[in-house]
Image (tube, rainbow, N blue to C red; front, side, top):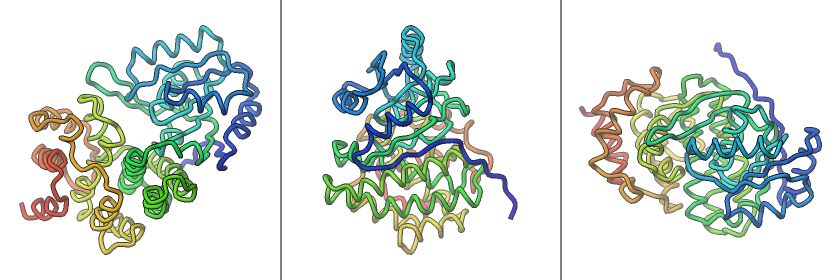
Length: 360
């Protein structure tokens, strides 16, 4: 066994019903006094509730999926104009992503308050979209200094969105099993993240107003992001970043749909990862466990339901192929990507795709 693993310098504060107090404590600990709050209009009331005691100099509500470059420039200008010395992001991955765009060029510290299971708050990954192209990168400046996890803040997240967001977290875990820099610590974190999601997400569906399921999901979201940030972006995320940026597909739903097909493609060539995933899902195989969980959650099934056309597949393949990780568990050809995308577009049975792929 030989590997190098780097732990990220970040404080994690976890407590249901304690967001306002924990947030105030972290802003004070950083020694900051001019707070810029990022929250979408849908999160405005929640934002005001938990930041009421902070020295807020600006509230910024232009939050959009995939962080358009123009929106990032306007947010950066607002931060400079109001002389903010800390950015507090409240919301899902889009709010966190906009805060990261500000930090990328200004170095301002971020305190993230997630209201979904996106996991962006625990990574050094940033992403910006211009036209139909999404660019991602890694930079230590964008890692939030602190994260405030309060499951009460996720109670208003509708069940279908909770499911999609949770499966996005599960996709982080799966990619962390075989990402470019994956190591045994990443795999251990990812396995525990999958186990916690397997426990928590069905509880969110059966008892949306209950805290235990949402606490499990938030805990798992952090573990999944930590593992993913260390392991790096694998095949699944390379596919989804292209689809999201080029076709403006909804982030969480795209990840939830594509995941079983990438798992079915890679699992036969990654037996140790496959066993870990299967164990975490308490199933005889990884794909069987994932499909059983997706069935219980009534997960989104097909890309065609979210605006991706069959005629888009060839162009998407051409955009994805150059960014496929060279150390993916198995070689990836254009035909392989075409079959994965067609199956995901159609919502086909991923186990059938696996057998077809192996028989070629």
